[in-house]
Length: 301
Ligand SMILES: Nc1nc2c(ncn2[C@@H]2O[C@H](COP(=O)(O)OP(=O)(O)O)[C@@H](O)[C@H]2O)c(=O)[nH]1
Ligand SMILES: [Mg+2]
Image 1: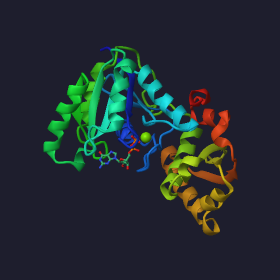
Image 2: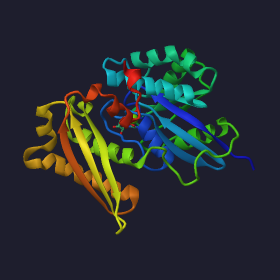
Image 3: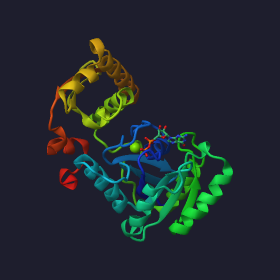
Image 4: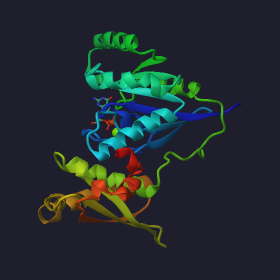
C-alpha cells in the first residue's frame, strides 16, 4: 500500500478556530487556544495520521490588517504557510459569516493558493441554526471556487473527521515526513514557552498579552528524570511587570502552577518551572525576540 504525506495550511481571521482545529486533528494540544485574538504568533505544525496518510497541519497566525511590526511578521507567516502547503483550508465563523476580513482574505486567496485545492470550513456551527449554514455555504461558494465545503465544530468535533478523511486523499503520494509517533514540529522549549504565554494571556486583560513574550532560557534534564525549566517573561513597560507579578506575586504564581501542570501532562514526567519577569522596553523591535518566536523580523519591516 502506498503512503501519502503533505501539508495542510489552516488560514482565516483571528479567532476563527484554527488552533482548536489543529489540536483536534492531532488529538493533543500543540497550539495554544484562547478567546483572545492573535494568540498564535508563529507557524505551528501538528502531525495527524489517517490510515496511510500523514497530514501535517500548519496552524498560522490570523490574517488581518497589520499595523505594528509584530502584526506584520505574523501576517507574513500566515500567508507564507498557505503558500507552502499542498492544500489550504480557510476557516470562517458560522455566526459571523462573510465579514470584511474574510472578504480581504478571499481577494488574495487565488493568487496565494496558486492552483492548489482550497477547502472551506465553516466553523462554530454549534452557534447557529442549521438554516443559516445553507445560505452561507452558497454565498461563499459564489465568491470562490472551493473544492469542498465542510460544516464543522472544531471544539465539539463535529464534521472534523470528514474533513480529515478528505484531506487524507488530497495530499500527494509520498513517504511520511515525520516519525509516526511525532505530533508536533516545534522545539519543546518553544512549546513550553507557548504554554506559559497561554496562561498569561488567559489571566491578563487588554493589550498586555500582546506586549509580552515568553522565552525558555534553560532546559536541564536531571538524573532523576525530571526537567528543570527556566523561562523569562519579557514585558515592554515597567508598569506591566507589577501586573504580571500580581499582588504578592499571586498572578505569576498561578500562571506558573497552571503552566507546570500542563507541561507535566504533555511530557508525562515531573517538571520544575521557574519564571522570571523582565522589563525590556524595546523587545517588539528586537530581531532576536522574533527568531525565538519562529517569525521573520524582516517580514515585519
Ligand atoms: N462555540 C465554538 N467555539 C469555538 C469553536 N472552535 C473554536 N472556538 C473558540 O474560539 C476561540 C478562538 O479559537 P482559536 O482556536 O484560538 O482561534 P484561532 O485564533 O483561529 O487559532 C476560542 O475561545 C475557542 O474555544 C467551535 O467549534 N465552537
Ligand atoms: Mg490560533
